[in-house]
Image (cartoon, rainbow, N blue to C red):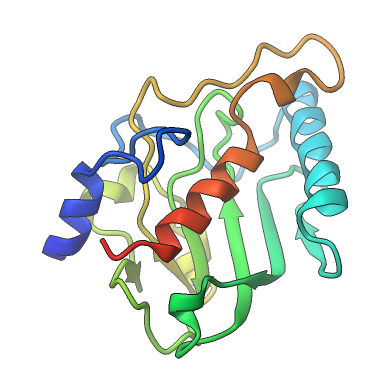
Length: 184
């Protein structure tokens, strides 16, 4: 693990609106059969993102179990312009989502580099128990970013739309944008 990633793991969020980031602590599971309520929440969030965030580009997702989402043309911040203008971006959702947030995200291994050094060909040792290893096996690189336990606050879900009163994929994408723009 690089010193830069250690520093990022200990650093508070870049914005007061975002939860603090650091090394993750809770083990998460990936790649199973999701319950109906979790599927509904994820589906509603994907629809909202496709209508309001990813205009003009596609969102691909696991239609059977909602275990992953790929933004096919994620527009990278200006500091990445020497590397790429846009790229596919994959978010692997833990089975515990929305109760627990994703752990990092994935960019294609074809990207030549990361301006801030947080792109890894494998999760470092601490993250192996909490980040999904499957995308790495499929030629994605892992971008390390964690949300401190207790700072992810999804809404209680009783009926359609309740998810938008708490943390969701919207906040996670905002965090992704901030860490991709960050120097640390």
